[in-house]
Amino acid sequence: MKNVALAALFAACLAGPAMAQNAPAVTFDVGGKFDRSFNQAAYDGAEKFKKETGVQYAEFEVRNAAEREQSIRNLARRGASVVVAVGFNNRSAVETVAREFPNVKFTIIDSVVELPNVQSVVFREHEGSFLVGMLAAMASKSGKVGFVGGMDIPLIRKFYKGYEEGAKFANPKADVLMNMTGTTPAAFNDPTRGAELARGQFDRGVDVVYAAAGATGLGVYQAAKDAHKLAIGVDSNQDHLHPGTMLSSMIKRVDVAVYNAMIGARNGTWKAGVTVLGLKEEGVGWSLDEFNRKLVTPEMEKKVNEARAAIIAGKIKVTDVTAAR
Image (cartoon, rainbow, N blue to C red; front, top):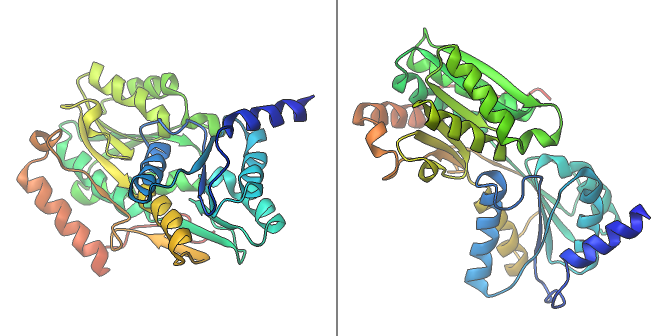
């Protein structure tokens, strides 16, 4: 009965006109395409492809682990030009299905699958996190800054380590508090818990908090607004969510990765292998716009941009805690 129910669900989600020849497909991770963070960035990239080419893409929003492999398999079976799997949680599913469909292209975001028909896109999140860590320390009046992560995994600790090093680069005496939301993918979609963790940090003296937690971060930002503290967004530019509260956002160009995969499959430039995007490639960065301009002084901006140039030049080394894995 379970398999029948899943089949019905996929049929409903993928219903509509038959997939156009050479049309791409994308499967979003837990939290959905409107999480205003990681998945939202992927959605924006897919939408850019659709707007530029006029080609409709197929999509699926994963709600639990049981749906991952079957959704990717169904998209491949329907003749997608490329199946883009958003999120490291899809690694096992992509590896399995890519072996079943050796003539279909697959792109996975945030993980590596070493197969001849798989393109893996990973980011140097620690580099972008270093920059917003600097901003946090420079903006903090208490000398205490916080970090709320989603699922406690090496990838999220990569964000944290870069943030911690950036904060201490700007202020060697900075105290950096860290909490992780959980140990399962649900940790990326729990705004209530995110708010609780942020409030706990504020009670301990934190006045700037960085969330690397997907939709869970929405609770962190609301808590910061309510407590009249500052927050830092992640993945997408989230400055507009709470102007006056959002100090900046660590932008991770998942949109570029998804767009490049789709347009590459269409024009013949798609290539298997590993692509790494950092500050040098403009794959990560920090946001400065009309929503946070008043919170970032010219001196802060100058120091962060100098650090950015130094990281690109190799003069500042930011620790990648996943490098040895």
